[in-house]
Length: 214
Image (cartoon, rainbow, N blue to C red; front, top):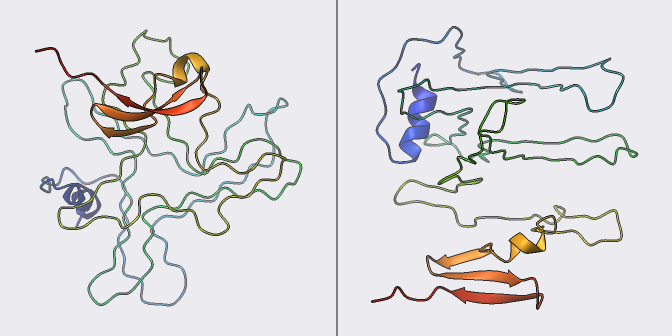
C-alpha cells in the first residue's frame, strides 16, 4: 500500500512496479465513508504581510521536490497525482487541477494556471553554460497500450476571453524573436516534415528536409 501511488504512475507508462523503499516520514491513508470533501492532504497558506517591494515574497501552498543523488539513474517525480474510477464507479476524473483565483480587478499581473519550467541549476546559482535540455518535454501526453485520449487539447465554451482590444489567443508565440521563430517546427508532422513560420514573408510554410545524400 505504501507504494500504491508511485506504482500506479509507473504502470500508467508501461513500467513494472518497483519494490517499496523504506516508508516515508509521514504517510496518510484512510477510507472516506461520509458525504462531502475527502482530503488526503490539505494546505491553506494566508500571507498578511511581507516585503515592502512588490513581487519579492513567495506564498507557496505546497512544494514537493524529488532529487536523485550522484550515481542514481532512476525516475524522479516531483508530484505524482492520480484520480481513479474503480469498477462500478462513474465519476468525473481530474488527475490534477491547477487554478488561479483573482478577486482584484486592478491586478494586471499575469495569471498563470500552469507554468512548466526547465532548469539546469538551483535558483540563484551561476549559469553552467550548457542548457542541459536534450530530450526535454514541457507537456507529455501518454497512455497505456490499448487506451488513449480522445482529444489532446480542449477549450470549453468559456475558456478564452480577452479583456483588452486584442482577441484571445489559443497558442501564443509572439514573444519569440524573428531570428529564432523561423527555426522552430511549429508542428512536426514527421521527422523530416514540419510546419514553420517564415518571418520574412510572414507566411506559414511546409518545411521538408532534403533526403540524406547517398
